Length: 530
Ligand code: HEM
Image (cartoon, rainbow, N blue to C red; front, side, top):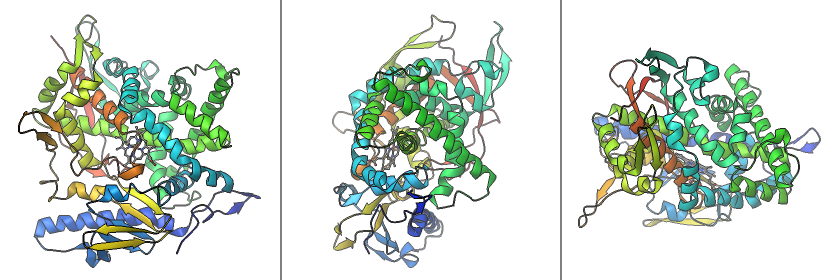
């Protein structure tokens, strides 16, 4: 049965068309995928443990790589040509319908039917603008170079117990200053590593898109963002109505409104700047990215009101931060807790930087991001291995025109109105692809050229960025940011577990990257580079 991707589920509220409800099948869509992923990985696990063949087709009807959850939700698992299938034109297989639905249901955009229709027409162009800026190697390198990661990592800790004197990223990390060195300066600090590094990462990436003023002007932005991500995002995805009286949920929804307000203020100032008007608060907008300027111009041309721009922008703001910042935390945790690894990585990244010991504490005077990407296979392989263990990527598309997919000797036909998902996360724990899948193996992804002996980290079957034409539009920048922060961190900081020998925490589901079951307290000291 075909359905109209826009008008389905739009209720008329308060005398105008507002997008306030979403069809029931969508409410269960992501929940079903999650259930499938969970059940399938449990079955894989039981298969490994007791060596019995227990195919999931006993639970879900299966044909080759196709599993039918419902007639409107089909899963393609472990299909060889998945990238080709998902590269079909957006008119046939659309990521924009999902973008619209998430924009309304999860990110809280209140759109009229007309603006919703317009969004479906312009969203490809909006994501392409992000792609040009964050995936193109030259512009991603230029942007990350301007973020001054080496300087920021050197200033990671203020060593002050006074929150007024701490950096923004220290405030959520429940810092304890532990010791003072002979010059009266504090030498060791205890902190919650996840909070410290995710806020640090956010302070690196947010100004790259929105400019520094946006971050400085909104001191509660990060607290509100993680509140929304942790306590509202998943509930909204599975369709929990916004009136449900769960305290943490209601607080997270209030945080979402404050995020909308902050982004609306940004769009108002950007518009003033664009039109040569006086900018509110005399805010400095000169470092706002060309990507944000272009997107604003394009949205204005297409008649999208400023409030709707801000509400939809929360999706991009989420894409910029939700996966990337927790990855910095997990990669650092794996690197420091794996015996001997940090020393090997320090040696590998050393040629990418020029160190200076002229200041009272060691500094990285110059950093070459291009060398980091091309000459540090072990660090890159560790990043891929961390993706494999902590990320849950899925590609979800809406079938807009009838389509056929080949699968060996089989052919699968899909009708318009079907949702098609590829749960890439399942492959990550498949022992036939990644032997000993539960172990962190630092060089798992390194391949050595037989003739030249050159070592390169390759993704192989891993798909952390999704698949096809709606693959992640921030991937080059994200890889550089995570590797750059970690390379500078291991060079400048020693870290130990505050509770004794390193022990990896249990994991709980996150909104794209898993979360630790309990906070990881660490003790940080500056490294002596003498
Ligand atoms: C470690 C960091 C990141 C991870 C693991 C990640 C992962 C993903 C995944 C799995 C998808 C879905 C792709 C699909 O449906 O096939 C996606 C989409 C997307 N990501 Fe990322 N992402 C990261 C960072 C970023 C950053 C820094 C940006 C920059 C704004 C970004 C922007 C986007 C956009 C715009 C999309 C939607 C693409 C489209 O509809 O065409 N991501 N990402």
